[in-house]
Length: 449
Image (cartoon, rainbow, N blue to C red; front, side, top):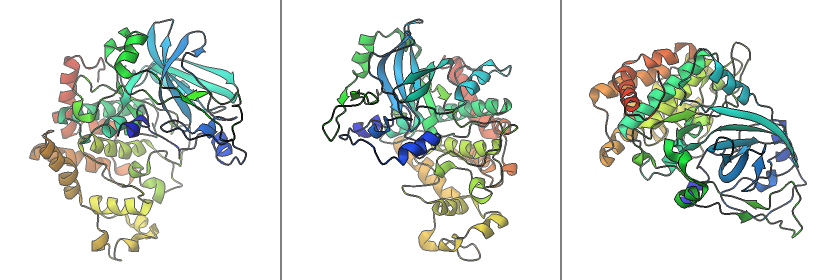
């Protein structure tokens, strides 16, 4: 179990996500050097021109940031814990693959400098962005505040995969506020899921010395990089690689004081007023259905609302509503129909695999029938919460929660609630927002609605 967690500690793997043309070049290379396998680290063959920059513990960047541990990795970057020698604080260094074109730094700067200010704890504070030349090309580095772990990692660390009910409500309120404010500023996030939602560290974290940090969370464990042909390593490859540090908590151990999130990874965010975006980058299980049935229709703010609804479900439920291991798009569509009702007629007519799951009149084939909404709600939320004494939704809250999510999961984008309207729903106003206000009063966050 511990080994599994290390691959999910800071942010999830995103190996299927396109970063740039360099990703394609790397994936099609036929002259790669083969290395001995090292578990729970980035793909070693991606240390090549156009790929990762080799980083070691103790390395310095800009004579200001000293690397003290590794936070994680994805297809487009490695992420490092560093000490800011100027401010004497810990920071996160996100070092992108070479020549990756991204506007994430500009977006974070605009969000921070906008007159419509985001609550300070809900997005990462961009400390600076700089570029440097390395053996594999030119890399962009984003320096932001450091976080504890992703909510995906917190779930993976848990044997029951449930957040306490009040914590789940607070997280739902915070995330919806963040999405609402981002939309107000003209942006679609475009990649909402548990892996891009991080928990902030307690304020006392920066008081830890490097020695205390290692004592509490463990020292970096350098794993040697060895070529299978026995030849010396080229300069583009690090001599050692590292597993990620684990500073998180499993879901069931989180308190209201821990429920202080940051929405991260704005690498695919965009402004619908300035850019036509047709492709969704969200995981397939929470991807809005219009990307499948209306692929030539530009994505809007409503695409975030679908993913937001699925993510809020994941805050309350033990497992996701849609998708499973090796689920295909057709399987997910069939699950959506069984839970949410018939597709719009034009979508139904376009779905060429519908008869694999339904009869011509839309009746589910019994042996392939997935659960209804009520059954999902009972089996994935109420039953596990009741068994684990994690707080169940009473009849009134269940009704309000269902009404909100069903209105967010309308098939047609124009029929979905806006983020502002989500904040005005009965479930938000009666349950989630009051718990969030109580958490603020208890000092868990400096954010304000």
